[in-house]
Length: 93
Image (cartoon, rainbow, N blue to C red; front, side, top):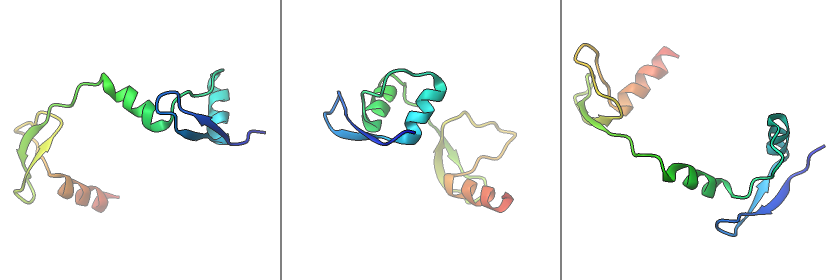
């Protein structure tokens, strides 16, 4: 029913593909207009007004390495660096 279409981004002028899957999604959501910007420009536009996250310094409870997290750490809970948190999540899976 749907076929991939090549569209031109109105922001950067680059060609981008409006895939059959995206077209189906647009139809399911009731969107009547095709996208006018490529993904890169849509993401940039979306993030332009977003305030950067405030980062907080921590010391990893597992390895002792300094890192930063996007939340205020609590004294009653351990906080891990990105690497240790990934290892812990992998072990739980």
